[in-house]
Amino acid sequence: MPLNFTAIDFETANNHAASACSVGLVKVVDGRVVDRTGWLIRPPLGFDHMMEWNTRIHGITAADIVDAVLWANQLDALLEFVDGDALVAHNAGFDMGVLRAATEASGLAVPSLRYACSLRVARRTYHLDSYRLPVAAMAAGFEDFAHHDALADAEACAAIMVHAAKRHDAADLDELARITGTTVGLIGPAADEVAAEHRPAALA
Image (cartoon, rainbow, N blue to C red; front, top):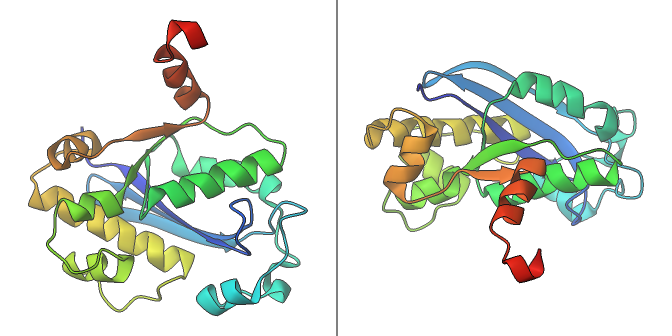
């Protein structure tokens, strides 16, 4: 199978995972970037206050998102772009947590998606003093991008995975995970089903 995935990055309005205020998406097909998009998000009600600290990090203000479309009305567009791909994010636990929390806070079902983490892959690919996104991206030959801009971060994440796959001669995401000793995880109902299968009988 070819190296296909969609890189994703979220920025948040505050310290709650449900407060997604921006997303960037980059589609990779056969190891090449073929499409990219990103947009602002109005977080679910109750999680939509913008903290000054977060604005300092990503530059998005409360005024920027006041007229943005609610996450509840954006999830379908995100899933349409992803089109069944596995997701890839740098420190994927954060981004998958945002996706899950924002969706649940909107009263929607969390979609079943596979995902991989470029941070974990970078740690098994490069010898660096830091594996923060800008440093790992530089090792992959992707430099001088606007860190904490969601689309730019997704592009950097994609570059790391494509470069790592070439370096390890991995044909697809699953092979890259196997070679680097990382995992391709699951969120949504698929993850719940796997957890149920591995739950001890006494706890079932």
